[in-house]
Image (cartoon, rainbow, N blue to C red; front, top):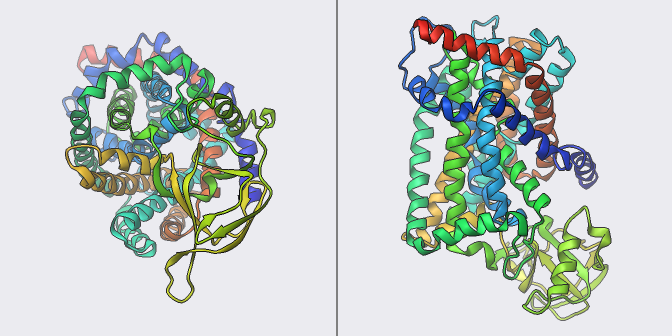
Length: 565
């Protein structure tokens, strides 16, 4: 498994983690923003009117309303990225990463407008009578690039499992276990049954669930976030200041190694922005292709609301919760994730006055510059007494920070409880060899755990974490529902309607299984698949820029005549 992950990480180095990718994603959005005359601003009001159903007609071709299509697409984007993804962006790239998420969202409003319009324009009715659309259809029908369409469709199926299915339920199960001590398998089986009941009904049932759940979960989360932000109101302006001031200078967290260069913060912010709002990935275009309407541009206008709601509102609120509460800079007691732990040779300090130590550790923790650092991975044995190390000559890093108050534990076979160990543990290439050893202590934290900690620093106190738990449950579950449809349409494109039933069964089974397995390799595969969707889609919409401009012109010509809807 480790070999597969390393191979996928190597491939990702040429794709999503490559230096060119943020510039490609932002560049396409900037091009269309200029080329189409700032549509995310000019058409915003029209988009709201369309969503309200002002121009809708019952006999328009399609399966769902504009609002239902928007809700379905939002259910796919508003997910763990809004809760854990923002925290991870700050953790990896500092406050500057939020600025680049904003840039990605603002320009992504135009990118999504374009990809949805073209996908809606070249959609087609399937043999079972439902609409099917997405980038693969315009790639084949307009660009005559069947091979590119196949790559996109295959990547969509992989992503449906890698981002929409397995990691979502794994996150839910972990949070439910941490918060309510609910066994992971119970969470997995229960939600798998609910998932099956929803997706077996196809897009109409999916849209019906989405248009009820998405507004509810968004309102709940926003209220909870505002309770924290208002409690720490004196830190609101300093939080914005930290975001803008760190764009070019980077920002180092107290006790950690969050210092980020301009390029690093940009890459982390852009990549997390893409993961959150999916503008440019082409996924949401699949949901919007089912919307009723004769004018493709009208549905495109609806879609530009997604990055605005997802990133510019919800992600910004999450960022302000984390920054204003101050928890992102502090070390917290937690159980260390094996992937976050690295033992390094020598003794280092992150206290004030040890800037050289911090600098070398920063270089070491960046995969691109690790070999340039004087820091080396530790190999050897560590003596443990009652859970506490009594050896020296090494430093344990966890979550990009020097771990403190470390305790080593192992499960007692008789009582099944975790108990401090006494003995010798072996470390090879910076990693513990015994996979059964559990390490606890104080360090920086990230992802959903960081957001949950931040939500306790408001009017609700410790009860604030329940908002994160419930929000994550709803966000992640609806994301799984939406992505089942995206994979469904990709399967339909490749194999016809006959393959959909098999896909749905596999999707539900994997959803249940993923609650109790390690999804590290799945995430690595998804990181590659996301870019394998995004790059073909960006190439495709660029090749169709003239088609896009004409489609928008035709819409406004018809609108002035009173024919557009």
